[in-house]
Structures are given as structure tokens and as C-alpha cells.
Amino acid sequence: MIGSPERDVRERFRRSGYTLTSQRRAVLDALEDFKGHPSAEEVYLAVKKKNPKVALGTVYQALSVLEEIGLIEAKRWSETPVRYDLNTEPHYDIRCTRCGEVAEIPGLKFDDFAARIRENTTYKVTNTSLVIEGHCPACQTEG
Amino acid sequence: MIGSPERDVRERFRRSGYTLTSQRRAVLDALEDFKGHPSAEEVYLAVKKKNPKVALGTVYQALSVLEEIGLIEAKRWSETPVRYDLNTEPHYDIRCTRCGEVAEIPGLKFDDFAARIRENTTYKVTNTSLVIEGHCPACQTEG
DNA sequence: CACTTTTTTAGGAATGGTTATTAATCGAAA
DNA sequence: TTTCGATTAATAACCATTCCTAAAAAAGTG
Image (cartoon, rainbow over all chains, first blue to last red; front, side, top):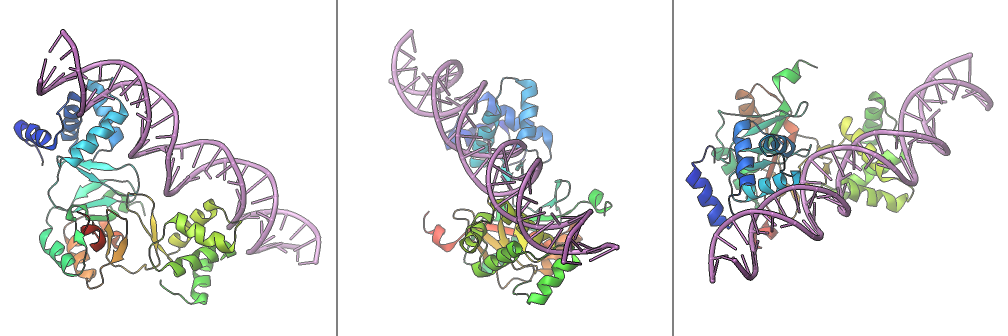
């Protein structure tokens, strides 16, 4: 759900029984400005620049709502903080375990591998959470 | 490193500059008794049955050492707590996002997929951390 | 064996991202 | 405008994990 038209955003809120408040709009805008995978704290700081009265807890709750209605996806690696991604299409992200940077793996199709997983497990795969870890180019040079 | 002979364990400690203390031995034993993927808290409770004086912090530190020297692997999903696995061979685990249960996907080769990841990223993949999420059979029936 | 040095431990306090609480405020519907 | 549920700001609580410190254990060293 990257760069959704305004009407899609409003529709998604309406159908889910939530209202598109100014705070939630600001969180979504901040997320779009970031491009990358900001943490809740980073989103909070960006939102606060335009509206200094917003509370950190409000940002957390807004992110939770945005995730619930499918406008964003929460990347939950264990090393805190959680990072948020506007790209809710199934895709592979790789995360540097040294510096925390997150990047997409562009040329890798998700579907065929997901199919092979499904063949070998009785679990119902919620396939948007596949995560890979490694070291980014910058961190590889540091030994 | 599942079910390593005692001499391998000692050797691994020695080479890494650590001593195999009774506390670390107890943590490793508890991990072997578990079979599954216990959390630090669960390991702590198991260890405490035989040695009530052991501290939770000691268990955390022992797990950290065991991970560092490669005897165990820490599965770091974001939803706490972290879970530990004696199987340090590259393999796929799937985790139920509803109940937290962790299971292996036995019939899925790791190498070929890891190779495809490497072809499409400049990251150096630390491939033991690949994690898949889904719903286990029991939780699927609950809607 | 002593003696010294280093490592490890137990106990408890601190950390920090995240959640929960609560009273005030907003906003849509009647 | 009144009403009532939804949302917010502010702040306290949570909790897995880490940090701190003095004591204990283990590892050198002569």
C-alpha cells in the first residue's frame, strides 16, 4: 500500500471503523517522507515538528491502527525498536545485524519460495513476515 | 551443535577463553532437556530446580556466552521473549504468531534459497537467522 | 601450596521500547 | 445543541533484558 490515493486511505479507515484523524494523517505522512524503515521514535520526532503537542503514545497507537488496517507493515525483529514499512506487498527485507539498516532484496520473487514452505509445513504461513539478516556493505569492511 | 560430546563442549569453551562453570553446564543441560525453544525465563526455572541459588542474570549471561561460542542459537523474533535453540545448523523455523510455538520445517533445503538471496543483495547474509511466521494447526481452528 | 589476578556469580537496580490508564477533548449523529 | 463513543495527551506501569557491585570462584604464578 505504497503511495495510496487519498480516497483509498479514507476508505480503508472507514471500512475498518476508524476515523482518519489529523494525528493519524501526520503519522502516515511522516512514514511516506521517510522512504526507509523508521522506528516509532523517529516517526514521533517527525510528527512533532509539525505538531509539537502530539504524544509518543498517540504515535504508537496510530501506528498500531495503520498496521491493523493494512496501510503499513510492522517489521518485528527482536532488536528494538520495531521498524515500520509502507510496503505491504509480500517482499524480502534484509536487515544488518550490526548497524540495524534495513534494505529490500529487489530481484527475488516471493511466491515460489512461499509455496515451497507451504508444502513442508502444516502451519498457515503469514508470508509478509519473512525476514533475512546479514551485514550491509558498510559494516562488512569493519571486520 | 546438538548433543555434542562433553569433550567438544569443553574444547569450545577453552578455545573461546571461557570456563565451563557449573552454572553454564546447568544452562546447557536444561536446554538439552527442553528439546523445543525455551525462553531465558524457562531455562532459568529449569536450572533453579537443581540449583535454587542461581540468578536470572546469570542465566542470561550463560546463554549469551553459549550463543557466542556457537553451542546454541538465539532466535530473535521481536515478540519477547527470545527463544533458544540447540540446533545451530542452518535450517528453517516457523513461528506461530498467535501462540508463540516454534517448529522446524524439515523438508526444506536451506542452501539453494540462501544462494538466491546472495545473488540479489550486496549484504553478507548471516543465514542462520531466517525466520518464517504463520499460524500453527491448533491456532488455525480458532479463526 | 600460598598469593595474586582475573573471571564469574548473586542480588538487585536500572534501562528502554512499548502498553495501559485515565481524564480531557473531539467529532459525528440525533 | 446535546449526547455519547472515539480519540488524545500525559503519565504511570510493564517486562524482558542489561548493568552494576561486592563477594566468590577459578586461573595463573612463584
